[in-house]
Length: 533
Ligand code: GLN
Image (tube, rainbow, N blue to C red; front, side, top):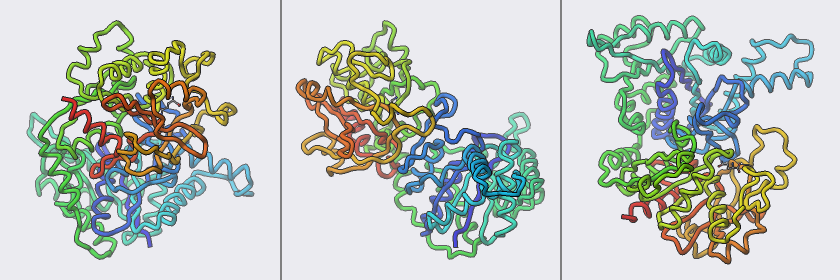
């Protein structure tokens, strides 16, 4: 029977609730349990696919094509399990489904209400995750902060679940902040007391507190919290600010939270196998070298907009004991008359990740040309691949007006164009080419050398495609189309064999990189950048 752990957050946002949830899942997995993860997002968008990355950060994509919050990326990187549609629940999805059922007549005769209709819908999503994943333990993170108007329906559902299932099947972990007051040199418990009271007012009794704190808290502080919050002292755990998020699981493990949760569930406490993770931390903390990689994008003011890309670079860096220093380059700034040599002075590799819309496009093209002409290792992702092809068509194949119809609908040489099945689509949300598609890889290519196999599956999130009419011409001029989706004839990977390391893909390899297992394309790109000294 599946057990459920719910992770709520109090006091402030940005406490690292997602990292706590992922860490718990990692620890329970390390103790031999099958885990699955889920996130509730209280906003009314169906998914974050239509949100601006500068406001909301990256959109993560699961293998089955669900566009989700970046937290799911953390989950997958920590627990190394593929998540899916059941992992991402938004108010938008819940309400639209209830309204659809109402119109269909499923509640005939009833007045449709928040309780029980909306809460039942949420509850079903929790149990569905348990049933379909067949996990021993499902960990659900509740987005937002306790007390937010928006998340009340979710919290109310948790109250019902706690009442129905009891502490042997449900555990509630409340993450909270213990602020430090400089003047009086004190850690303060009041905000935590208040936020636990908020939860209790809504009928939920948390079983564990995970306290974000700048340094270790004292026994006295825990006793006070225990008394005021009705939580056993040993269930109050410190989550000390970590240099690196990957340290958090080990910090929590030292305080025994995984064991305490299993005890509450009356489940066998198997020995935790954390060898791989400990090796990772050891490597991470002893990086011997550094390399600068330029990330050229238009959302660079919010680094979270490129979270998985940066993580993937770091994962490869850990493998080669090398610290990755990112040179954040705003693509729009390259459109002015700037000195590229100066900007890329210390850069050993250039990456152009995904993006949407016109802004900053010509700047990215300039960066790609610079990488190509100066033999600087290059990795293009999605939009990065499309622009690499446009740059090559313009500069090498002399098709001067080569472009994508995304930026110029009437362009005479649409090297990148809409797929025919995309042309009829009116709705913007959820209609991109999403999730896993096959890619057949040509032998004797960089891609084959990286993947060491000729059939792969990678995750996608795009609407536009390389226009195969131009394939022969580009090939004649030296571009290799090394990866193709045979079912639809769509180009997946391109490369330039004369270049030191120039490769770009239509899919998003960053979603599949893991800290202990860097993605092959990032691995070889980082290696080439390190070797480019
Ligand atoms: N804007 C491009 C498209 O829709 C690229 C998308 C992306 O980079 N994720 O095809």
